Length: 131
Image 1: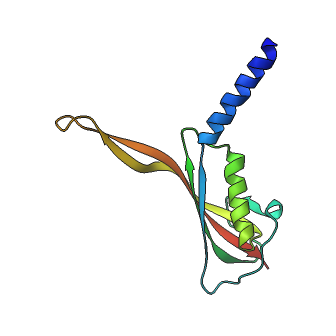
Image 2: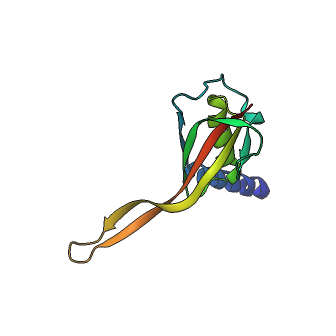
């Protein structure tokens, strides 16, 4: 019985912590670029360098992810794949991946204020389609 309660407690705590992690994405298709139908997210590649294979750029994805707690990198990559698949991408090339201040708040009395920054992860990916 104790093992079951411990297992349930650990599971509940990990679910609550993972629920606090967030990943938001905004996808923009380029004007004048081809507009193919959606592809399967499972077939989309996440790359760090532009491939040598001929391709066209379809659009870009901007991802905002929390840092504390940070979502698993597999979830971030899956978000990139899902968004790229929506606009017909075969791959997404990550061109920017940084942790940076995304907001700030002021606390304390008027005569002794502190400014605290809130960190966030920013990613930018270019969606491509192979020719």
